[in-house]
Image 1 (cartoon, helix red, strand yellow):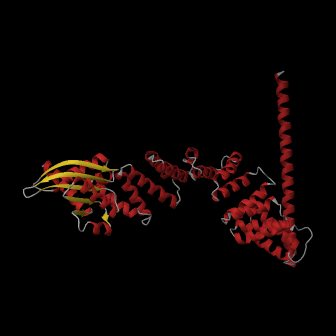
Image 2 (image 1 turned 90 degrees about the vertical axis):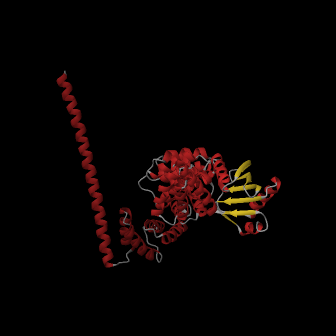
Image 3 (image 1 turned 180 degrees about the vertical axis):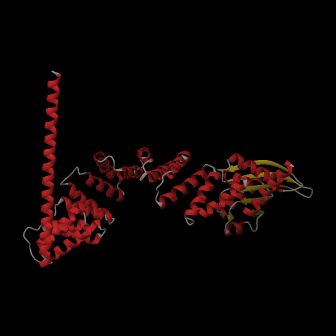
Length: 455
């Protein structure tokens, strides 16, 4: 019984092999016929072109061969010669619409967009409702940044093939460029359902959510793309920007760090990732981490935004802990530092601080009774930690505060500069204005005093 079963099994295997070999042989024969037919057609076309270089049938044959092979340069030249012939005479067996359509496709492949556009327009004149020509023209208008025209053409193409993923994708991307994110995301979602591996469209969907202020959905999309070698850096940058807007600095720094781990990053994205990471570290008061990133950015692109200004400023801050506390420390650290400066401002004197007022961490007003061997007075100090120009309004406010507490003199110290209006305002008033150099002297005196105490 087992022998009969084995014989039967061998017979089945032999039959299958025979059928497969027969099918392979038939395919081989058919392929050989196609090759021979193609070679015969090319040979005949070349023979006819040798006798008449303008033979339209021969040009059509050669152009078709080149187009199907993807030899765009030769295809375009052949179709161009053919166009000269069919423009003068109607040639039987040659589809003028196809000639212009294929000429346009060949030109687009060679990035000759003007020639492609003219060819597609002519082809559309022969077949207004053609799916293919409306699609090709729509994509071309998209590449030329004529997004409104692109949407019109792509919408016409979609009437012939509503679920075509390429149409849905192109429509979605064009609508997004037109600042219509909610309309765009409907098409892009459908396109992604049909082509789940389209990472560029997934990224654009994230941008749509971001533009529409749907931040949770945007972050979810960008999270899926963070590890992608192509779209990952962009996704990390956008996710980081969202977290920055939400003042979630820790999450933002993680996004930028992940983005910078990618190997192939476009130069503009790389620079922005470094810049954003450095400024996020600064927001986190991690100056030591920010400086190496800024130095790296400067070495790659020394003119990028305000990188030189930031580097100069934060290198100084990193080296001067008192200045760092003045500018970036907590409100408590800032006030404690200002108290020390008030207590050491006048030498050989007795100083008693009677009141401290803090304005949103922008400045601190400290009122002090000062007694020296020659005079006694009520002095008010204002320490301004915000950088840049201090205007007249701030100084006027300080003067009003002086009069309220009946202080005999005011001392206003900033890390920035005073405007000309602010300086003129204090000329006839008992207010001394000091800029960064005076602040630096006071901070240095604190350092010197601390050093002497250690000895």
